[in-house]
Amino acid sequence: MKKRLVKNLLFTLLSVMAINVASAQTWTNDSQTSAGNEVYVGSEYKYRVPVVGTNTYVWSISGGGTLADNGSSGGFDQATVTWTTEGTFTVTVVETTPDLCSTTNTFEVKVIANNSTITFASVDPTCATTDPKTTLSQTLSFTGGKAPWFVDYTITETDGTETDYTNVNVGTSNLFSKEFTNTPGGAAQVYKVTITGARDSYGVKPSNHDFGTDGDITVTLVVNQNPATTTIQHD
Image (cartoon, rainbow, N blue to C red; front, side, top):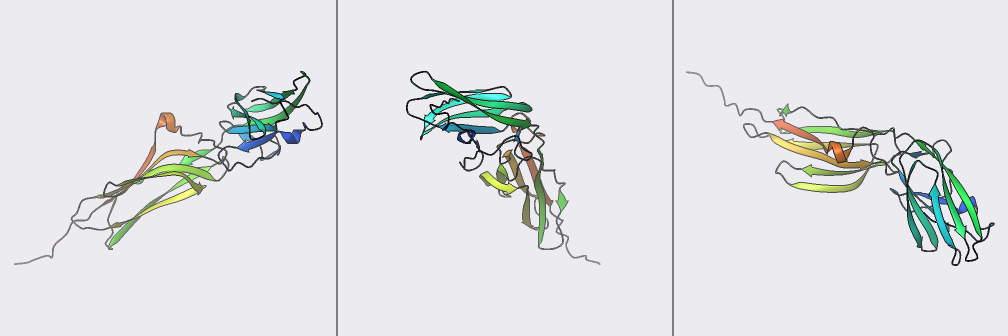
């Protein structure tokens, strides 16, 4: 990213702000080193300062990630950092006037390990109950990271119809449940939930599952139908 300031008084630490890209565009100057405010490995943040006149801005980081310079827009000069390594690092912006006078400001960031996990266990097929309907369910849950979690998934109904859901806020867990109509003597009924992506509110993905390399996570709910036993006869 880029940045620079002409007036030292104007260029304070309050000028540098961080945003969680997975949430609404709400800028803040909160510390990213204090307990509970650290950033996770894999998270992406934007940083900005106000643009003054025709000053130019140059951004840099001391390490721990990759930086993209977003340039100036809407009265601010911005940069995006994807944090990839644990440790304490700095985001620095240098502002330079047309007369080549410059000021430098630094913002410290503590990057901690991604401790988030996703759990969506398989469910064994079951026989239909003796009631008119059989209900099966499974819970998708998350630990660690920063709640709420956002999930992309596909539902495949018993008739094969597929519906995609994108960026659904599931908090820290979500119960997927299906009520099947029992049809004695009929074919097994199958309902699928396929998780295609997940991220916490920092945009960090689960540490125990890489959707890019490990693929989707699918839980299949299956109800096998009971035989349509007829009335016993005798001679």
